[in-house]
Image (cartoon, rainbow, N blue to C red; front, side, top):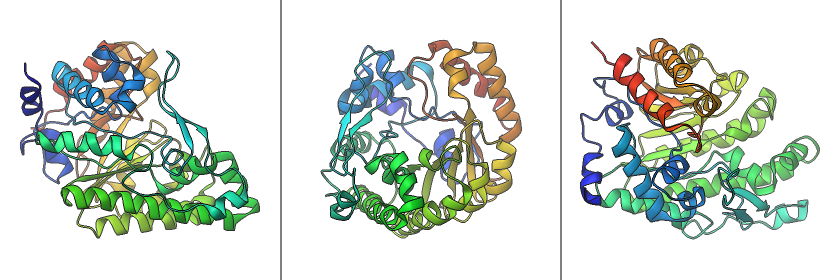
Length: 359
């Protein structure tokens, strides 16, 4: 099959379950979107994990070929949890060994208070991984697939500028420095999103994730003071560009933050995705009337568990959230594990095909 034929097979037509639910319509069945499938897909077709982050062409086609093989609902994505460190002038290490599964910051651009005050917002078109992500988006657009922005949430971006431990210390002892970094991070992610809108128009999906804002790291009071106002501004301003749908990954243990997340606009509809730490019934309680609910199969079980265990978690999730008012997407609770047994990916596809149909 020619590459262009693969793209056509995977195109988001109006009857595609994922495209339907993400644009506010009811699909025939629950879609399955394997968030962060890049590294698994690279390994699946014979590339390296590092290729999935550093080589646009390999990352793009590995994702499409893997989708062709397994038949899940998706489109090529580019994002990573360490976003912000490289983009603001630090250094990043792409995964190079069998134990490394994602990029990590090897040198933070900010290590002292003086560094924080000297730092400026980087050029949105050339910073860090932006050119790689833009090229992948152009490939998607060229073959008629959806485009998604690559940015992280404001708090996570700021934590990757200086390191999450340092940011947490500054929130307590030097809050003005923490606010300085959060201001720069906010201006940056807004500018990058505007770059995507200027390039492709507003009919795109905005992506953001906030692993560093989880309650394993900060308290609800700190979230209210340091994460809420900046993320609210970020979402409001990108929705003002004409973007209608934000996919926001509320990563990790964030149960105590949910009342604040509910104050942040997500679009019409937005898509909110959750880790296994947040019960899908709780997610529906807070967001079901305004957002598509997505999640929340534990990645550790996908990688280490049996296919029977994976299927059971999918069954529970589908039964619990299938009839969420604005729709439901089955999804891993974070990035799809690169070293997961391939049959466990097939099992998740099988679960939606067995249990996800609407009458």
